[in-house]
View 1 (spheres, rainbow, N blue to C red):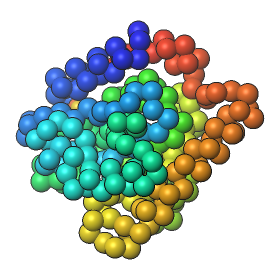
View 2 (view 1 turned 90 degrees about the horizontal axis):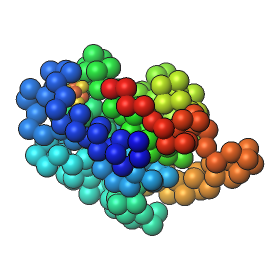
View 3 (view 1 turned 90 degrees about the vertical axis):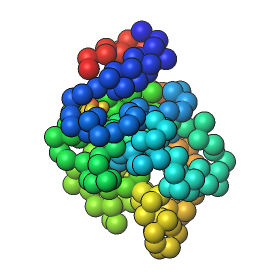
View 4 (view 1 turned 180 degrees about the vertical axis):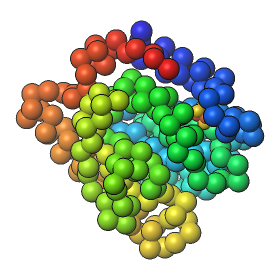
Length: 217
Ligand code: SF4
């Protein structure tokens, strides 16, 4: 199955999904959007009110800050892929519960296996925990972490930063976000150099590299 077909199938499944309670109160599913061939993906926690209204990720004030941060490193949102670990909005923006994260997990797993990004930038602590359980955002933000993901089938390059919403609330977090974003182009170059040195353009499993992704959702 081609990449675009897999991504469209995931979107269709997410839109009809009733695997957890979150679909009951949400208006729209937010499967994620952007360039499915992007080198960099940005992963947040869950949709908020604006995202629930539109079905699109990061479209409120936090999304505007994300776009501005991307602009500072010469990227637009169309040139990256943006998604969340949870695809339906938790009521009143409460934290997602462990069973909800577990129920939703296969969707992002298959999305990542399909896109095969070189770099995964996690926005906020929940998105970081998803990949790096023992992480601490104040310590680990702005540091590249190698995560051997059995589910995705690759050693992932995970780069945690604060959530843009935290940057809107607190000037100190905003400065940290700007600093961490400015390092993204250099981090990407280092990953690409490492892949050339390893004579391997990707660490993803063979079936993902050949585009033979199984849609086991
Ligand atoms: S949040 Fe995820 S698991 Fe829960 S209903 Fe939505 S798509 Fe399904």
